[in-house]
Image (tube, rainbow, N blue to C red; front, side, top):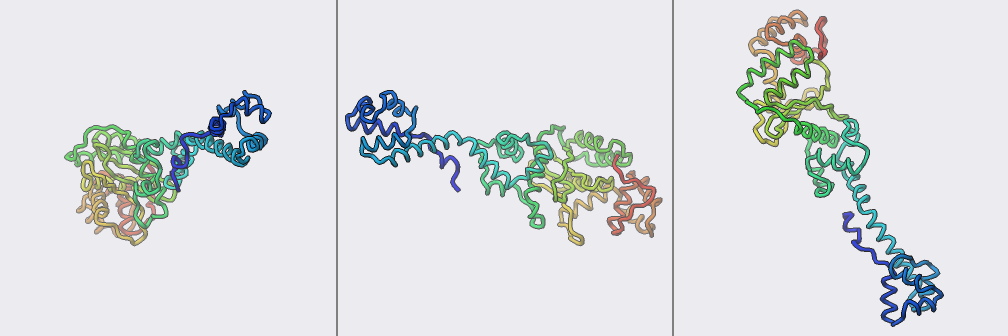
Length: 362
């Protein structure tokens, strides 16, 4: 399909210009032509200056006077009006075409739900380009190949690629707006200790976690997931700092804690400054193995929440689902009891909730 600017003339030629050429070539004055066809000179002049159109009656009279078919004049008038309309509508048609192209590659429903769109297409197009990191709409037209390749998703979620790409773009856009202190990788142990303390306390948790991570130079965002995209979190490099985005898809403290520490595993083990890599925590099908990097992040999360030897001893002496045992391990390791229970449930495949342990995030 041709671009809109290839379909639009820069200038519309009024048939009055053609009429002027004809009478000058024949050495006929406007007054003489007017008297011949029964029009005032002023009327002929208005046609020549483009202030008056050529209707069917005038076309027939010109055909008789100049031996040029009436269809020629009517078609010239029609072409002029169409070209004039194209020029006048060029901007709006461009907006329509860009909107249609963007709608193919962006989850508009999600952007509306997240209050990024105001309902005015021209402004919304600029906003979408800004979110996608493509600059402004004037210099970056919504070409399908460019948008399709801007973000990629693994094959297993190909049917959700548009929604996933939109969520990813929004997350990165939100992170870019955050300014934080310099990131110091050597403070890892101190950060982990403080995070576990906040998890154990579980009071105003999300805000306190955010403030703590920002203080350590890690951007932290809770970004609601898009529809049918089973994503829990993502870690990536944003400007001069690492960033973690979480969805709270499962609003339980055990899932929150493990996902957070999983993403921290990517931050401390896999992310490099100015890296374009992104690590996304997607739900896996039952029995599906994680890749090596995701496995490393899982091991990191578990070992930071509970010391490996302590976990080994716990599993050796815990023969059944036991709330008191979870509470004992939690006190010993400085974590929330629900986190200890969640680790056990995941490892054993037993997802019953123990009595007396609250999994809610406060």
